Length: 185
Image 1 (cartoon, rainbow, N blue to C red):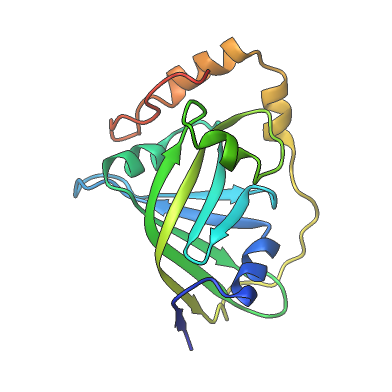
Image 2 (cartoon, rainbow, N blue to C red):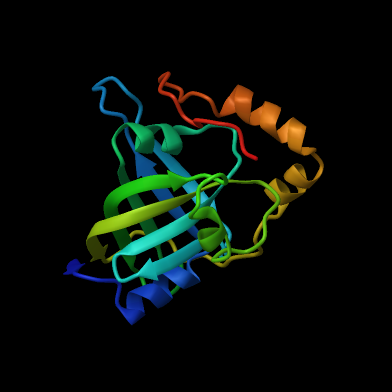
C-alpha cells in the first residue's frame, strides 16, 4: 500500500540517491497544452537539499518544456522507480523554479552535482507531497552503464555554438511558451 511522508526520511533519501534514472513531469495551464515527461539520468545530477527540497542539474537538451512550464506555473512532479528486486515507486510533488548561471544562487547549487560541460540550469523543487507506491508492475532490470553521450556532445562545441543551439532549441516550448529567458554568461 502507498504511504505519504511529511519529509524525505533517511530511507527515502537513500532510495533517491540510488536511482540511476528519474522522470520529471510538467504541464502548461492551457487545456490544449502538452503534458511533458522527461527522463533524467546520471546519478550525480540529483541533490536533496533538505527535508522537503530537492534539486537536479538540468543539462542542455533538444527542448525546454520543463523550463517553460515552471516559468508559467511552477507545477512539477518527480518520479523514481526501483528496478531492483524490491519494488517501489516514489513521487515528489511540488513547485519548481529554475536557477540559471547568472543567478547569485548558482555557485552554491552547482557544487552539489557532478561536473558536466553543458549545464543549462538547476531546477529546485519545493516538495509539498511525498508519496510512495508498490511498483509491482515495474520490471526488474540491471543497469549496464551510464551514458556519457550528452557530455561528449557538449565537449565538442564551443560556448558560442552551445549558445546558438540553445537560442534555436530552448527559447520556446513546443506549445510556444517562453522557455530559456536569457543567454548564459
